[in-house]
Image (cartoon, rainbow, N blue to C red; front, side, top):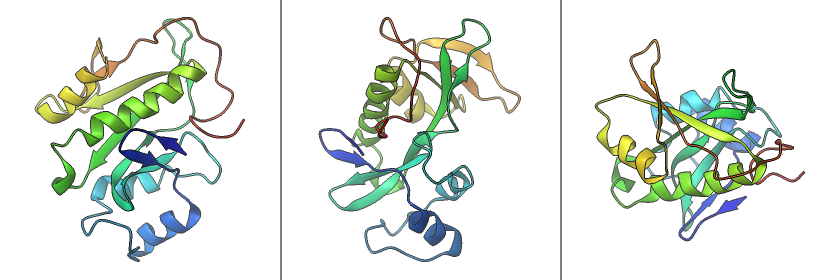
Length: 170
């Protein structure tokens, strides 16, 4: 489990994903969780995959999710292991820095494994662009086929290849 100053970022369990997919509520979920994006992320979940979706938890309440869209693979331009990240919060939790803090926590774990993260964001999503900028996503790679900006964060220094998911046991 990853931890930040105010948050924990546990990987989703089979029970979490089953609850989301079947519409069962968990007592620790915010009333607006899961969001549509969380349900979409549940389709990426694979049991035991340390690169999969995680909850963003403040205290005991799940406020949203963050995770990678699968394990890293070498980027075609430079061979650096890379994967895409996605994140989101229920509306009530926005504006408190939770998304920035969760992303920073995930980046710390990915940096330790030598994995670069990229993100795709709608150009009009100013809040998400601020989260990415605050976390050092400075490489603009243009737009994808859906019109989203594709941004990446450079790794902070020399790296070694990934051995397991961020925060997962080796």
